[in-house]
Length: 371
View (cartoon, one colour):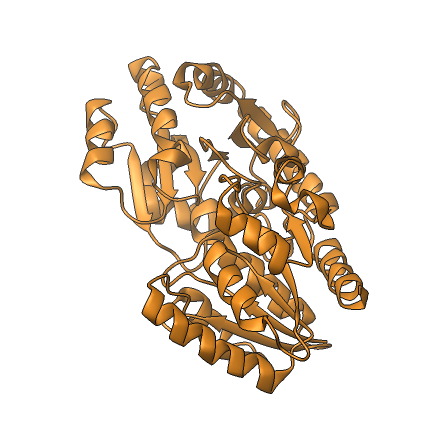
């Protein structure tokens, strides 16, 4: 098959980057793969290093004059390259592909992955559903349920949860863990309970609720906890909440990191306390690293683990609900160990790349074969 993947993000790109990179790595040996993404994006940089993948600078602008030029160029490109299928991942690239393939003698099939739970009742979505979509991939059952009542409800839809490389994301050994903790927290790291996240510092990622929960603990217990959050450094408004809680010395922000294992490897417990989430790569990577994980009962997050076995499922925006978990972690260090092992076993059984790739490839085959 000849497949074109598209991505709209100019910068970091978050989970979209992981999603597309996993497909490029696992399907590249057997299929001709192309990627269209802005040249300054993290995805462009990463994918350019994969042998055999054709990476091109591609933009998806909404301004009418620029949009028209981009769609015309894309139409010429589709006609020249004769792709079997285009896999789009957001609204803007989906729109461009719908317009560009119209009237082509051999239009490529379009598969759209719905990565979020935003509203899909707009005119644009109705047009894309009717004119520019042959199959929908939902990243969780929660996302799939949201599609049923939309314009996409009559289209073929397959739920395929994220796959990750569970050999790459694996528990670190004791010496590596000690070195990372020393790096982030200094000589007193052994007495600390480190709560870690690679989900970023946006308010809706819920890390501030954890900070406020730790602040509710008695002083001697509070001093044992540290919060390690990778992503863009928090802005002034978010830092003001950290300072108001008296937690500025308990939080470490390493910024954007190329290898999240350098963050999660230093942690005792992971957390993804999002206010809304379709599924979460961060949760799956954290669990694969052997960390019991705190998550919220929103969106597709609860599909990742069983409460009390590999982690905990908590209400959204409820710092007080986190406090009993913190007390339990401090009272029983073995709890972190046993639940961490359970998280690792669960990730090996359910999060690996093989079923993710096989199911996605089957969607491609079925879509191309459909009339």
